Image 1: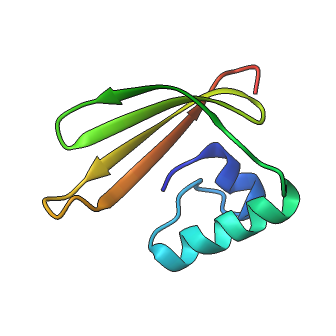
Image 2: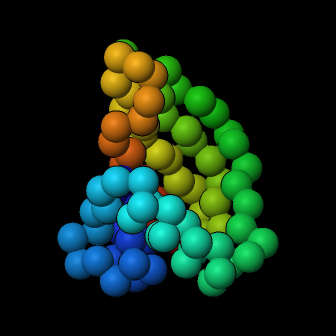
Length: 85
């Protein structure tokens, strides 16, 4: 998982996490900071072995690109945020 918020929340300067344990710990910390966090899905964009979720997040517009393996499991996720976020 790659996100600019990983730098702040997980104190990981690369903005990258790897594995279920690291991603789970990140989301636990994020939800402690913003317990009422919610997203409004605006659109879903389909690609080849990938999916993009376009949504209104807590800090503005955002998109997450999810890449899937042959077993249809997410193997990589990229989060993108508007400059105003």
